[in-house]
Image (cartoon, rainbow, N blue to C red):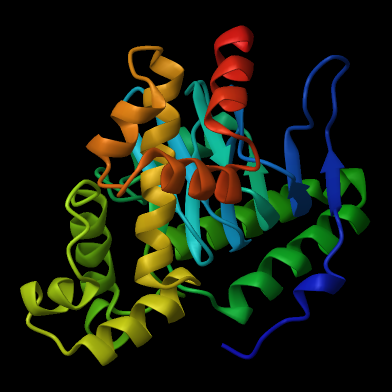
Length: 283
């Protein structure tokens, strides 16, 4: 993908059909913020939203499980579905579109959207997707009230196209399936720390090819991905209150507790003790 100048992105969105005390029913635009440390936000909304991650990584979690996202991921935020999003430390940029819940129900009833569509899908970074979001935001901002229904129809078609793969890279040509499997292996191998080239061997692909595909789709190296997954898991163990740092370091394959402390602070922005104290207190 030809790079956009991400640093020039600013928080800019259009909100229409607002009601007192509630979010606007029609929303579209760009979200930009800097997470100085890993942070988790709880959400519940009455509209259906489709978020496209341009920069930044994290985890979406609801009662069905936890799902990692990275640049190029699509995140469905379904109406009435309580969920949380954990943002890793760093800059986060995303584009989003939101429509009333009855539009989502129409998708489901007419089978316009695959029934078992994952809540997080990796579409790959695509400048055309970003442009579509930005164009729809401009149009929503400028539409006269009496013609908003035209924007709603266009938004529904855009969401339909997105969820049915119009803009997505094919698994074989982009290596999407390989990268997904590599993520599963790396995420399930947090304690062993086996060599990353072994992942390529398990997938019957050259290490250089897998490394290139992984970096292109995920935006980070396989080594960095596993480090971040380790820190996520360590954070969960700290918040549970059932483990001390020494135990966590051993269980996640660190050579010693000092190495664990150093890496945890580098990624999360806080020492394990401060992270645990803050999250236990907030809970």
